[in-house]
Image (cartoon, rainbow, N blue to C red; front, side, top):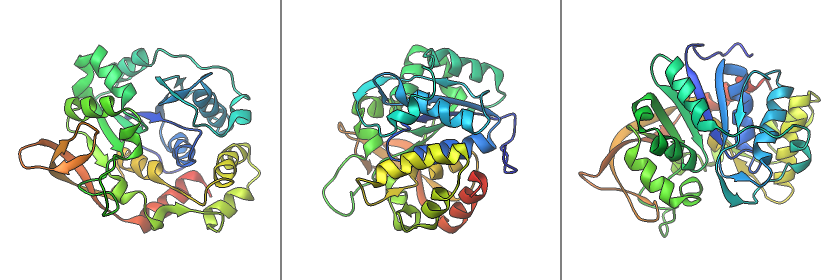
Length: 288
């Protein structure tokens, strides 16, 4: 693992819709290089469990065969761009509820849950096993607060994919922290084919880098850019201080749009980010 190591006593669960926009794969590399007690659960899984298989292939290339990968809830998505790379790994098991409970039982203090997709998996766990609620500390990417790019209201992707889970989860979780889309979909962490990050990854022949670059290449062949939403969210879950949070009273609408409302659900939401420090950390922990 990398020299930037999280306290080995801390368990981290990465809940990820890996295999579509590449920021999830960047986050997995960062977690694999810095977290000893890591569990991966795939969110918004696609037919055949391909997200889990791609995660397994990437972890094996990073010399982390010890990290378990579990197939999460399939919501019928077909959003996946690394089919060939996924086929290099075998099918992965389900039973993620048992894996989460085991982590909670073996960890002193809360398990850190890095939410990088819809909230379906964590809601499923806590609905089936509500006694784990206080044992799981969720840092979730997603949500526009009050406005959407200063225009009409729109629910951000991770909350929109499973609106019901978002509404239930944001009400039942024990003081969740939200890394808002207001602070992740920004130029400071946007990646294009002109970015140094892209160029350095393209020139890296390590097996893990080839698997990661396949995701980047396939995505950027049809889109102009992507944002590092999920590595930033992971950094907060790992205790890094790049993201600043403040408590707000947040009302969650029926379509999971978020608004400030006095007396509503108290949550911690992002208020700002030190992007320069985050970008430096990410490059160090990934090894580029």
